[in-house]
Length: 340
Image 1 (cartoon, rainbow, N blue to C red):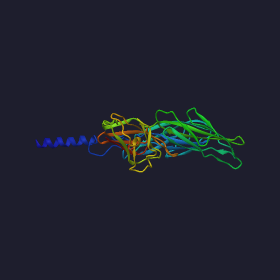
Image 2: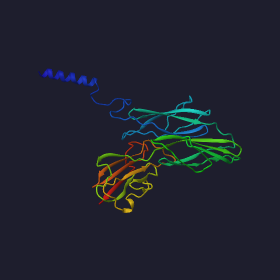
Image 3: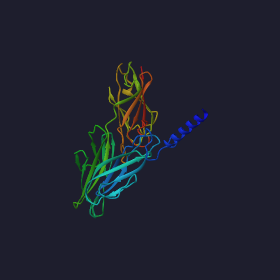
Image 4: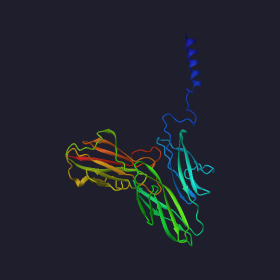
């Protein structure tokens, strides 16, 4: 009987070894169990034929990261493998630029953007360029064009990428009508006194205010069950950019934190000047995600809420910027406390 058991154990060991059950994971090309694929994304900026592409790809898995980048510029040239390559096209026209990324577990993702470039300027010409910053859907565009010696400004034309144009203004402001996270190709064309023109085009990512409260526990409708005063406190901030504006939209309109990213932690604001709200009043909030000229959104901004009337509600906001472990809902943490 003992010999039989020993033989059986030996057979089981051989079978497990053949199946890889003796320990050790698979090769690097096999994604880990439960691994989520990265989200490919990129921003671009072009002046005439010369472009800079910047990956804004992200991986939501904690401890994971983008491991490889592969850029196909759509013009039969050699692919690039860096995070932010520069590329000069040989001819004016439209090109489908593809970025493929892979994470450390081998999962891949790709995105294609159509990029249109124009012919380069001749000597003694303008070199168009601009910066853009946004708070939610409201953006400001600033012309930073330079001119060669012998070239001087005559006119400018903005094309905001949504069939809207504007002449002359600098800086120029524009409000987009997007209902979801949307990328536009904004364009500035500058002409000098001799009639020479230069064009700069950039990707601009905007998103509407985050208003829907994603309930993750407790009574997540901010309803005052008793007549109460309401106080909003900034518990913490950890922003990727500046300009995350917190507002109350009902039953009154009020800006609570003009820029929660730099407003002092511990700041407290009395809603409606500390006046008492009637019982059964529902408080509604929105947060407008801000950007800087060098940043781009990767996710739709969102708010989560926990808590209840008795203990207060905690709002956690993610501004939509990418990175390892994002979205992590710690960009703004706000406590809403009602006092009967």
